[in-house]
Length: 232
Image (cartoon, rainbow, N blue to C red; front, side, top):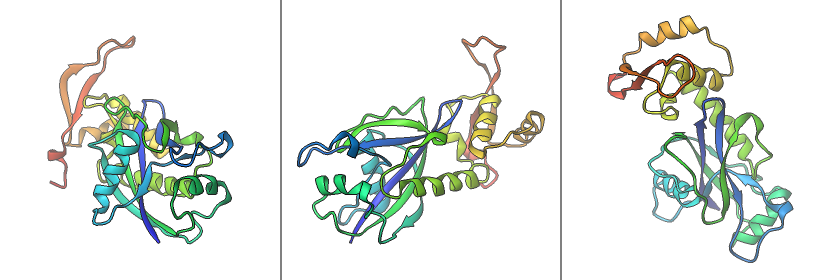
């Protein structure tokens, strides 16, 4: 039995919630045919004597080039059949030394600002790209199920844990903040009530700055200060 980590990394491009995916390729045993190539979450085995959180950070950096990313463990997936699907066998038999082994994966979800993190694929990732979560393909293994639970976790913790700010620029407008909440929660929010609630949040700090280079009336900018959250 093998232990792996998989990283569900979300970003926000201002209009949609996106997920970082890699295309499975291999540099061992020859290339896969085009029809056998699949998109997958960044993931790989945990090394012996390696802490799980260290493995998640290492794997994400090795496959996508991204580091210093907010990652949080949220679930373990251990179905005996999770790597036995017919669609997954070409890649497993091309790359894995023991493709028949059962694999239990520890899943992490992460949040990044697309302004600060540009992926660069390497290792067995043919390329890495941000994909709209509303238009995901059929992913490798059980990665669609992992993604679904990660999204549910994100929705549950968006407001209570103040984690959505990880996906915004360091300086953001209330319009951007509301748009993020609406897209993640998949519902329309009343503008007046939303801004009224934001004004009660000590951790959303108004700045004496406004947007630049926009065609509409420049809006005031804000920043997030984790030291001012109500839990501190």
